[in-house]
Length: 432
Image (cartoon, rainbow, N blue to C red; front, top):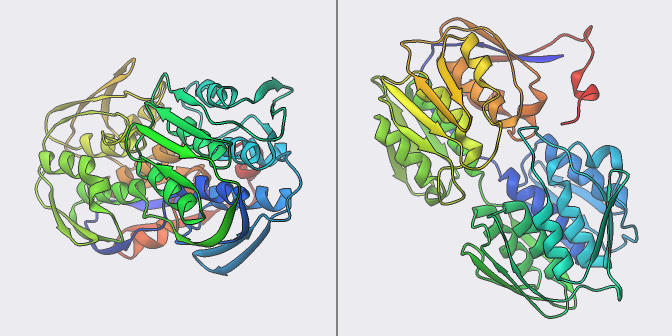
């Protein structure tokens, strides 16, 4: 069992460099399936979700080569297999992008139902609706999604998303990149990693316009060729370290960011009394006095990200006054609240709303990371708390944060990894 042990109550000072975006990487790497030739992908985050998606591609027959710590070369030219391995696929939510990519490449896909963090029902009906509109027949049997086309190629279609869905938008983009004709996605999601995927595909020869707006037009092409592409910085990793500086206090320069992607997070922290200064591709976060209450509602981009909801809750738990968080995207994303209560937080949840009454201080306690972003929020709370916080199940955190312990240690956090080998390794016994 691997734990993080944090001696909290120390303000943070120094610099943190942000890695490549997890949510972009886990879409761009499967997109290499559509490309004939070598994709050189730079600024790849070293996280377990990326390791897993690369292993899945290798299992399918891709040639994957590590150039350096953050650069990979992926060549899917020789792949002739459209069935993704069950054991690996069920451990990662983003594995559903394999359906769109394999459909686009082969006109057929066999992919196990995806796994990932469990915070409510996350149906893939909008994905399937898109594939069917483009001429695929989709059947779900025995834990697998089977998708086929009659003539081996999808056809362009007009697709209206009933709800704004990042996953469905990306999956339909992947499927449409090599389809016959024009595909138009209406009510599309606008997140930065959707724009990044479109830019990647376009750099390989695709014809995608409108990414970042609610109407995306994809004119299918016969083939995509290899090339080089660098993944954008991780908006959520940057936001997490912004909240860490706000909760623990001090002054932290967060480097390698796109400040516009962080506007909604910056606005809330400034509203609470933190100082945020934009410096080119960096943000300086400073917090000296106690923060004040605010209300937060999560929404699709450019609204406040659901993936930052637990981290902002950790900051609000220490802010003066009573704050409200309304979860506007997922059900059951407040499972971390009981862990925060162990540390002395005063939080009450009613459906999709959490009422947070700020306390003077949190106290370190043994707690458990119940999913990726909740785990990151527990690190934030532990940094600000008085005493020692021990966080279990940190494999959730390592799905999305590269070198989190090293990065925080470099700005003065007292955080270390403790491994107790005599206990069963939960990483092998739980789906992540």
